[in-house]
Amino acid sequence: MTIGIMQPYIFPYVGYFQLINAVDKFIVYDDVAYINKGWINRNNILISGKASMFTLPLISASQNRLIRDIEVDNLEAWSKKFFKTIEQSYKKAPFYQETLTILTQVFQSNPANIGDLCTTSLKATCQYLGIDTEFVDSSTIYNNQHLKAQERILDICLQEKADHYINPIGGMAIYDKQLFADNKILLNFIKSKPVQYKQFNNEFVPWLSMIDLLMFCPVAAIHVYLKEFELV
Image (cartoon, rainbow, N blue to C red; front, side):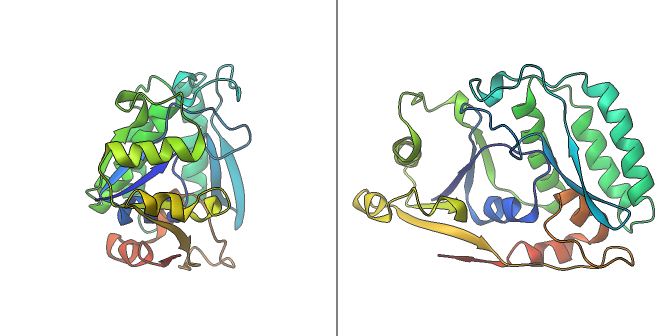
C-alpha cells in the first residue's frame, strides 16, 4: 500500500492533489503545529491577471498550537466577501458554476477548526474529480505524538503496513531513504512538473490555488495534469 502524509491546506495547488491521487491512503497531518505564513489558511487566486492571496482569519493562531485546535474567525462574514471576489474575478470562467458549487459546499460546512475546513476542501475537490483515495486524520488513530519528524512518519507507515511512502519534494533533506528501506518501505519524493492551461487573455500565471484550475479546466484535462509529476 502506498501512503502520503501532509498538513491540511485550504484548496492547495495542483501538486498537492497529485500527491493525493498518487497514493492509496492519504493521512491528513492535523495534530502537528500550525505554520505561520504557510499554506494552511491561505493561497493565491487570479485577480485582474495577477496572483492575489486570500487568507482565512484564525483565532489565536500560533506555532505553539496544533492545527486541529485552531478555529476560523467569523467564517460566515469572511466567506461573503470571498464569494464576491470570486464572482468578480471568475464569473466568465468556463467552469465557474461547477467550482462555485464546490466552494459553497466547503465554506458552508460549519467546520470545527481550520484543519476540518482544509480537509473538507480536499475531499470535496477529490469527489468532484473522481479521486477515490482514502482519507485519515492523524489525530484520530496513531497515538504517536511523542515521536518527532521522520520517526513519526515512519511509525505511521509501519502502523498502516505501507510498503511505499511518497513525500513532497521539499522533504528530501530531512528523510533518510535507507531508514525506510531498512523497514521494507520504498521512499519517494514527488516533483511536480509545470502545467499550463488557458486562463483568460492574460499571460499565464502558474501555481495558483486549485480553485483556478477548477475554474478553467474540465475534469478530463485536470486528470492529465494530475499525472504531470515524477517520483525521485
